[in-house]
Image (cartoon, rainbow, N blue to C red; front, side, top):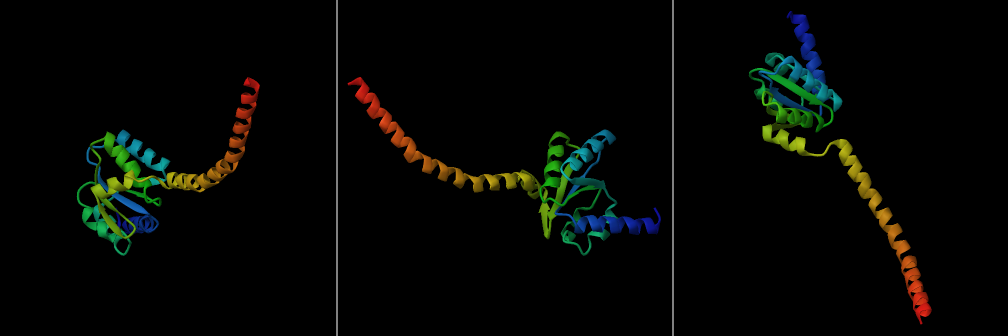
Length: 172
């Protein structure tokens, strides 16, 4: 690889780091091409990407970014998972790592904070942005449905009382 292509790769990596919400660093030793392809497809489905990187180039690209604290993780055969959603890449990586022991999560970072493997696992256990939006909408809609229920309750109670009096008169 010549110097110009290395500089281009560093610039591309730096751009992905600056636009990322989370970076997950993994060891991928022993993954077959089919397994790697399956992992990449899973990443694309959630809006993340998975790249095998050269450690020295990744270290250069990380300098001056919010993820500079993860530079020590780049030893051995490393690959990175990157996404703008702070949970997507971690979730997809941990899901794949559960079924395939060849992918080892080393750690990563979320804008300005370095995480170890347990931190990435905890991040993966959080609900996604879409799930949080759904829960928020549910919380916002709940008071409205309760108000409707409270407003309808007196009318229903009155109808039941009148029905009970009518049945009592018919029985007598």
